[in-house]
Length: 361
Image (cartoon, rainbow, N blue to C red; front, side):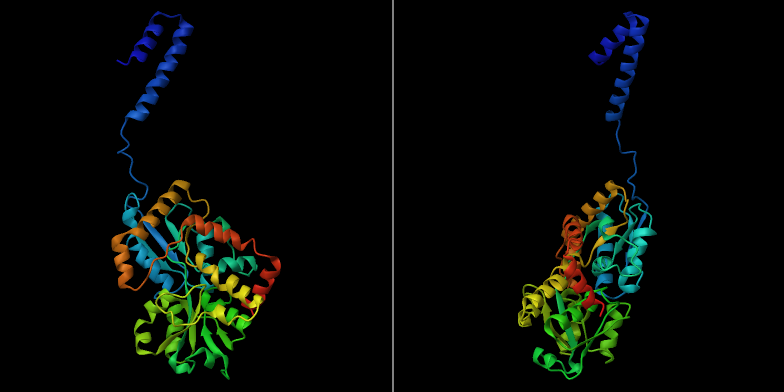
């Protein structure tokens, strides 16, 4: 028997009644603590065992957001204790605002619902856009698989095969999008029109990249603005055939695979134009593809999913699958996401008003 326990028992046996009761209580507490640290925890089942995690994608099937969600869903479960099933549901509408609202105010904060939406709508919260019922600062971010590198794609049939032809086009070049200010497909054409004076006709109302792609292929639209990763995955064969042309990079540094394609910032002739491109297109890609949980999700589950997300980004099988799909990972950690989203709300009010006028014009 433990020496401390023997001494306590001796005191109980030979001490006064009051002293014996006091020491007995100490002995009882000691035994409880001993048992709590000695008994194995193997009998406790992991929370996620036998459960299903649902990833809600705010855009239609077949596009870049959907592809990333399904790719991650195939691998992240094995990195979560209990190895839950992970499924993907699409909830398109209003440029993913419907899905963002659902994750924020309808989904239970139990760690079983993950949202994947267009981060552009976080900026729209700053503009007080009608229909937004979330506060982006309160989501629990778990990470992003990729910081978008935006590229302007046009169809060969449009006749716009160079920047000179675009600047001198007699008719505005039409670009498809979901909703004003909602995705890069919507914001990039408007920013370029305001900053560079390019003839642009934004056409919103499409559910996602798949619908925009079909409209371009049918001749209904001239082009689209989306990430290089999504573009090369969606239009690999069309680019090889020369039917789709990557015309302009809207990034701070050239993309390694297309160094011959010019950068938008190099056409800016004023400081205001450069600032518009930097604030409107260069910075937002960091938070463009967030995976997040509802506010109030238990911290231990948030941390568990963050660790699982980070592990997935390094998973050899996951990386092999992304390589086959021509998808390159460029992960953004949860802490960085939180930082840049907070930074949205620190913008100068005058610049906020200017961006709002441009993006919703």
